[in-house]
Length: 112
Image 1 (tube, rainbow, N blue to C red):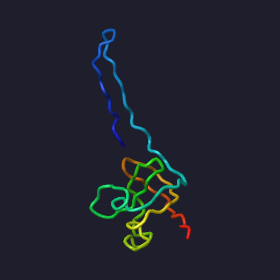
Image 2: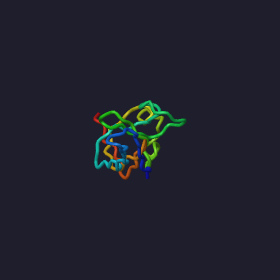
Image 3: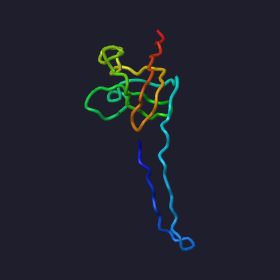
Image 4: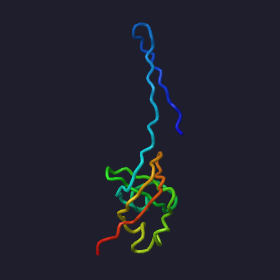
């Protein structure tokens, strides 16, 4: 869990310093959210040494996926693999930092 960060601003207002606290936000939970899924390295411009499963939310932010691997959905380097294409998926889980802690990850069938 993130530590509470407190910023002390030494502005004198009436002779007393003002203290502003920044509390960490609670993790965002996704439930049956439709997202883009692909290799984060090959398609989403994320930095990694290996091909790894990632999701991209509708607003454009990408997250590494924890709980499912890229090869659980077939060969990532096959013509229909995540390193070659981006797919839609329905996911559930929690966003923590730059990771999506997935509890469910279902690919949406592609239209022919």
